[in-house]
Structure formats: structure tokens, C-alpha cells
Image 1 (cartoon, rainbow, N blue to C red):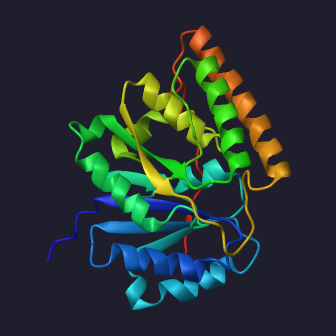
Image 2: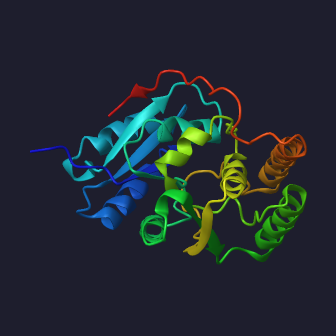
Length: 261
């Protein structure tokens, strides 16, 4: 019996998510069901809590055979963990989303079905557009989006919404991808620069029920995210002025990924 062709790999960075993992894996199990061509790659992104042990226990269970994990020994950023997982994924299409379940797994599968129905899936990208967020968060995101779009002459709204789904051929063009929270901005900017057909799909935005927000969930997080985003916008704007590509330059080296399960 031949090996099943993996059609979709969903990368989920997990940093100190021990309290959320059982619910996360259960939600993906219920959503994926019998779709053996879909895998979930849980990235233990240098966690310092019980994440490794919890993952080991969960992934020993036969009903969770759709998922596997690799570990980044030392946390080097949100983007690093995602890139780590993408480069170790087997799917024809690649996706990432967050471990906090604020974007439900069913919306990731919907985005995947959407890209497969587009005229040229290999030259397309589907991303989430969050619905149901608090008013202040919407205003903050809108302000950042307008500024990024103006500065980079590219439609860049709600850039941190999940999921992101694209054909794996795009991965070879992401050599200069940042390893922090600006990876989402970079990806959408790169997709626009390459002329990909970018489509947004509405996704439900739920409240995190366990664990601690790692990005812009708090005022301090928003400040840190804004600062990094502005620096990334400046870098990308510089590449526009100089006529260089967002994917130019040699690939970044990636250390060995220890396979946990």
C-alpha cells in the first residue's frame, strides 16, 4: 500500500501552551475527521512549561495520528517557529494558524477548500479576515493596516488574521522572511509583490480560554507588535525604493529540528 499524498500541512506554533493543548488537538481531531491527506504540525517553539510532556502524551494516542510535532530547542521568535515547521511539512498546500484557537480549525479547512477552488491555486493565497473582535482592537488593526498599505503601496489590512494558506512553491521565495511577529506582514507583502491572487475569507474570532496571549493581546503586547511592525515596514519600504525583492538574498540557515513524535 503506497504512502498517502499529503495535501495540506497546518503548522501551529506552540510556545508555553501546555494548558491549551488538549483542547487544541481535540478541536483539530473533530474538524479533520477521516481526512488522511491533512496533517497538523505542532511546533514546540522552545517552550519552558510542560508543553513537551503534554504533546508526547497526546500524540501517543492513536486517534491523534493526524498530528505530529517537532521541537525548537531555544525559542527564537514566532516567525522562526512557523518557518521551522513549514520547511518540515509534507503538504502540497501549507497553512499556519495559532494555538490559542481564536481562529477555529474549521476556518482553516474552509480557507484550504477556497484556495483549491480558485482558478490558479499555485499562484494564490487565502488569508483570514477576523469578525467579532472588540472595537478597540478593530480600530488599532485598521490604523496599522492603513499605514502599512500607504507606506508599502500594497493592500495590507488585518495582516495578523489567521489562517494563511498557500501553495508550497511560495516557500522557496521566502528566504528573507523575518523570524518575529512581522512574518504575517512579510508574507502578504511578498504575495502582492509576486502578483498572487490574494483572497480574504471571513473567520470567527473567539476568546482565548487558556494560556497567555503572546502577541498583541495586551496594551504592552500591542506596543511591542507595533514597534516591530513599523521597523519591518521601513525595511520593506527600503527594498521598494531600491528596487530589490522581498525574497532576495541567501537562505537563512536553520538549525536541526528535533522530532519529538
